[in-house]
Length: 583
Image 1 (cartoon, rainbow, N blue to C red):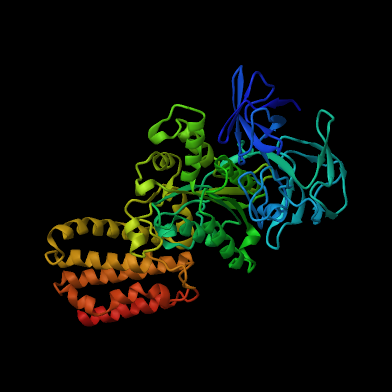
Image 2: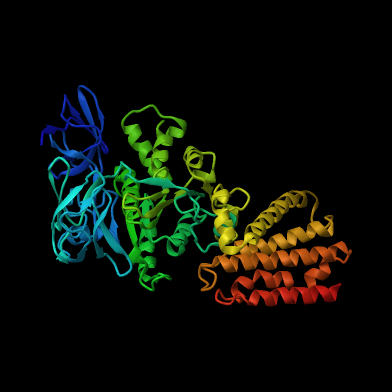
């Protein structure tokens, strides 16, 4: 490989003078410590490099060596139950090598190349295979089967296959001869460039919801598997907490959690919680189906930019195996700030609020890699992206939030007032929206009945009506409202406190099945309909409130276990009985 000398250093940006043989986006090694970098600009007299590690100590004249390949990650068994930095270096292995702090130019293999895996071959000599087909399987964790796939751009005939047995990461288990006669070794791993999306056979419609167990999401603002959602909110509104809940309870097979520029204590909390939490589906530790990418706020800023692409590439790899993957990006605002800092170092013309003009296209590159697809191996898989956005001062008109809205179809707006009132999840039901209703409502109707969609529509209408009434109440007070409007305010309080608010520390309320969500809406709306009949007979609403039914319904989320849906019928009977007495 050709070696050149550093001419200038400006933070993470390094320049080389004169003509070079480097290519755009080529991965290079910078300095005596072989710091990882990437070519981001080439002119006839200079080359610009973005370095993903701390550049302290670099000097003009230090070497820059090319690799001839783009920035890539190693894909294979060992990704799950692991924690990486932004460029897929395992932090556990680095800690063993250099202690609590990451040393510059740390040389560790991304995946454990000495561990033995029990490999079962799925091909035999003479088999014709194409890119994406599964040629071997192995148990990566107790609950996830790792499926080894032919690299997407290769196809041909298997000319050699090893017997089933134990193999290491780089051991050759099969050989493939392509149409030109070239032999390719098939090991337990492959490399893939992080900025290139992995090929698929076909993109499918997003017609299946991602079940999260969070009522305000599943019922009011659902997201489909393969969809993209944004969670914007100011400091302290619960973005990270909401993503933790989704990572723990959503029905995705695999979780990729990217801590991009977040505080170190938040990432350590994720590590502690996930290692202690038992996966409800398998009874195994949550980490058995989770991969963490930790790029905390004190790590090199350029690696923050790469961490998002590393995470989505790992997610696509497991999607190609036929798994449903959910990626939590926390937070894309910190990623955009890294773009802004590097853009400033490059002396590029700033756009709105100093962000580079290419911010929208970079956000699009990321969010467009979500999707539910038919894979090259013939199975179906999905990548669902849930990205947190941290607008300064909770200002949703700032560029990152506004551009994110353009590329996501689900918007869960976190409200500072709700968070400070201890209403969690603090998702504002007026400002939030989902555009997946037309896609996934047929699924809800088929699995839960048509009344589920009807209940949701009525609940949304009541909340909207309450919002309008509260504007009047602020001006003239609640006493002057007629009883039918007072009833709307009372039933909306039950919806807000009893349905939308959820307790992550309560065994029955941290995850709520869809059947229970539907029954809760059924009971609330039944009380509303019966109360409306009473109000129509000019019986004061104060007498209805005195029955204690409104307060009882705010507590039914705790009083009715998830395993006893029949108890909702008792609530219906009690409502009918007490209302009948009143009439």
